[in-house]
Length: 269
Image 1 (cartoon, rainbow, N blue to C red):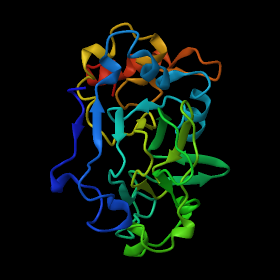
Image 2 (cartoon, helix red, strand yellow):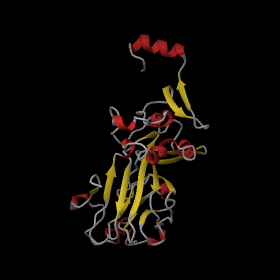
Image 3 (cartoon, rainbow, N blue to C red):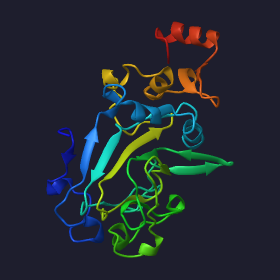
Image 4 (cartoon, rainbow, N blue to C red):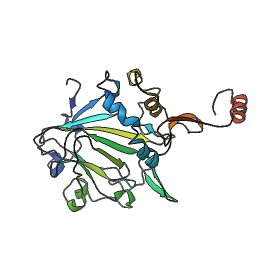
């Protein structure tokens, strides 16, 4: 595909040279975007990830009612020898040790919160030892930075987990959990489609502004379009997916909306 772009420039590499995650040092990761705007039916498997009734309950539970697509979805492809991605992320940033509210995980009175949720659709098998996605289980609760050797996959490897997955599986993870990718070692090409979702009032990415590409909306369902809404509160006439998987619009009272219009001269405060 001519739209697939390999990270060949050294400045685009995501690992340190000559570390276990760097692969053969020459083969770069390949990136592909724009799938939501492909012609039907080619866009359908990717659009389905936005509001699939099997997945939406997890999104609602982990990110909140009114969850929204935050980043441009990304297909990642790797040939044998391709570099991975050094450890990154964490509620407490694994490199700096600073609190990262943009990725944070929380648990308050039994309610889980995540500022950013990663969702990865597996488009190829990931067998034990193949490489690919790796995660430090439990690191969403960590309060300390990581040693550089662990970030580079050189030390404490017993705490680094590579899930075994099959084509069609979906991996859901908090961006507040430290994660990365191992160099790809299998003979077959690695393929995943990565999505990120955020709470209704939060934004990390910027592609939604002022609107996603028009092709993302063409032929999309009302449920999928609701997930493409920009960040604003569920109280402000936001269409959300309820527990039944159908659209519900949440609003303030008519009197309050009328009052705000008189005060500000606009539909919303």
